[in-house]
Image 1: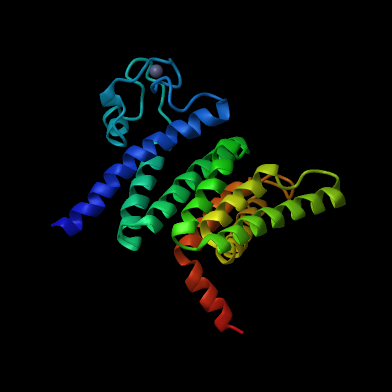
Image 2 (image 1 turned 180 degrees about the horizontal axis):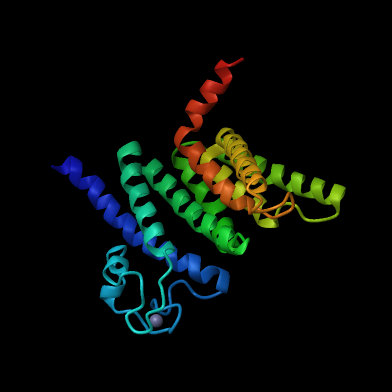
Length: 255
Ligand SMILES: [Zn+2]
């Protein structure tokens, strides 16, 4: 019984955390406080009652519309809540309780927020990436990957993208990578260590290229249409955190 109960409780906590991540996703790019005031309708501004604030359930009960002004509520709300709930339940099952689970969940939450804000606004807020670097390093003193690998990951991740950004600017005289990208990869490096940072960068580049080729082939965007790299870094880091060691072993076995 407790075997099934623990992941269910983790999913419940995840749904509540996901609801807070939604607040961050909506408010951080608008420069608003994430703690005050309480949530309101994005359209008419009316403050939400507690029963309109229950993760996923409220969205379904309200059939995706505000109770007073009938404006549609973004599908992002239930999606982010569901993904965060699933991440907490699967994380509990995969890592078991402990500091590593806590570290990976904090990183996962940061990645969800950065993914969505970068996709919608093409920015990666410092309010997430800079504290993320500090928190990732602090976790690494006590759990994987260890403080030295974390420091190396932080410097490698930040340094590589900073160098690429400057190189691109030097060659093309325009900004290719946003300045937020190198701080985001530094944060990922602090959490995952330098090895998984390389896996992250590789996965982000591959997924970014595939999506770019798809967009060009379907004529939905040209070579120059900006694809926010932070969204791909988020996907790459998630893949690296889950399957990174296996991917590295497979890659090394090819040689
Ligand atoms: Zn409304």
